[in-house]
Length: 220
Image (cartoon, rainbow, N blue to C red; front, side):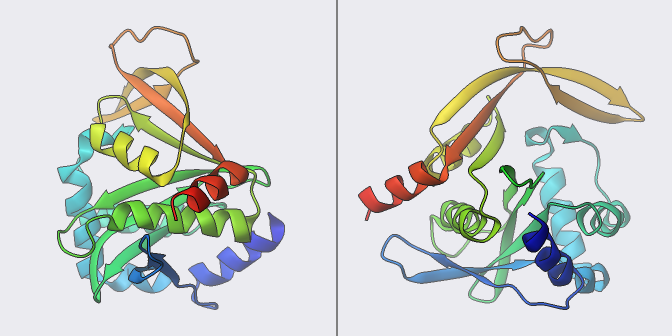
């Protein structure tokens, strides 16, 4: 964890470059993953894209609010680039940014795959699935975690399909508790087996390195 975090710290302040190839089922490169770093704070186009995409998909986030470019920039500066154990990658297809995907809560043992978004059309039809696979593979090989996790609201069918196509199989169902603070709605994940007073639930997924490699080999 310490070694990979040192690398992440350097990448986020543009002292080290990282570019992850997105491969299709035949190992052809169909896109690239490039992390958001300090230099993106001055890129209004990217800030505006991320803001617009989040507002269009607000109901799929556990934390829900009306995003603005200023708020997005502040989130990147004060949370994404400062809090340890996380990165957000821009997804490139033929030099066009079509979405983002990332991870957070990285520890020595596990990590949470997070923030999947296809904001634009075009590119390979399975680009988001293959992006997720590329990040999971990078996390297993470079961060050397034992388990990768994912959290998906039960009504978000497209994200459930995405998560299972990446290879996640282990799943538990958890209630969501609603908290409203200053016009911001937060859905907090409860314990498995409990009942949600709002009839809203979340699936918690996980996959081990062994299962991921096994799935990859049998699908070749």
